[in-house]
Image 1 (tube, rainbow, N blue to C red):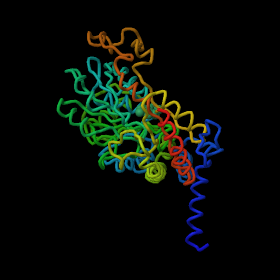
Image 2 (cartoon, helix red, strand yellow; image 1 turned 90 degrees about the vertical axis):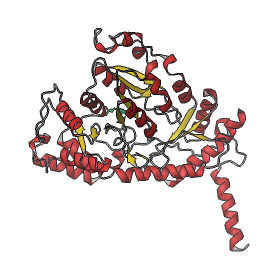
Image 3 (cartoon, helix red, strand yellow; image 1 turned 120 degrees about the horizontal axis):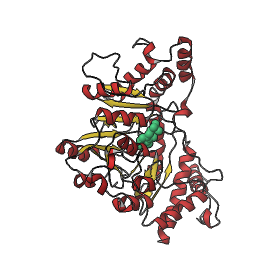
Image 4 (tube, protein in one colour; image 1 turned 135 degrees about the vertical axis):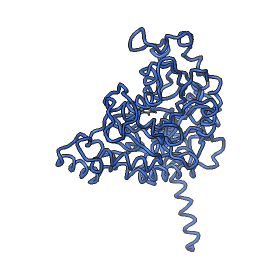
Length: 436
Ligand SMILES: *Cc1c(COP(=O)(O)O)cnc(C)c1O
């Protein structure tokens, strides 16, 4: 046997081994699984902790000034983090706060959202998006998602009223919402656009960092997000007026390092401390490494399943800009999707239904409009009393989410992990599609 034939033979047997079972029998039907040790989900930023975070923390300990404003502005870890964050997100300003929820609450106050106002938000998103609108005393108005799992630009305009003040576009699971048409609608109607990029820190849309394209953007830095100090949040904007309002709201109306322009604003305390700021300073410097790692892994899987007959990916409004945190495929029905989930689990490559968010209008307490106290202003208007949540306000959202499932990508997956993910999808998907 010459060298060429030998290599060709080796390639054939390697391909056979990758399928794990030449009969192609699914593990769920008793065949050999692609992996015996199942792939485990991602843990993002904490996996990248090293001596950089450690020395930042050490400096704060030795400095004895964990309160950010006890430090000169050029020495404060929080201020340094804000500067690097604004530079990375290409906004003029960034304000660090204690959580993504605090960032949303701060944005509501900065954007002057209050009783009598309405905010349009996607029916599929995180609780905080809804509850900060309620905390502002305003009325949440849900819109449907499309197959990007984000706000459907085609379902916004008919929900706009003279009271609509803000559209909240949420970029979920690493994937940008379709910002251009959403922004066009907001501009046409004189409505502000708030971007929540909590689940997509570092992603972009047509070259623009998520969070930088609307009037304001927010990020969460909680442990499940791209970079983290366990908790944390950021508000970004390029508007000096909105920034000053945000600063005052997050710090009991004081503006400590800004020429005073605005009057009193009854704020809270959402200030970030220096320990958190130090860890996040180290983390933001690793952001492009982390997202580079996850994108490399995701692209291996995308390439590996390219051309798979009948495979329908989640809609990606900008495939270059998304993070690739989940490789989602769509099915004809929930029943077919559930069979895919079962079969992939048996292969040792678990896939899950879209997660990390909630179909909010069907949460019983939200459907019944529970507020902090019964006389809360959110639902006090005639429109507020009449608005209906529940299944009938978002049937397409419910349908889309019931038909998709995806492999979650970790930035730390090895090449072998991604090869296994491809092998499992290529083994299971055609079988599930063939069953109808
Ligand atoms: C995590 C998250 C938040 C809230 O952030 P916290 O830091 O947990 O308060 C808000 N919006 C979205 C879309 C999120 O995923």
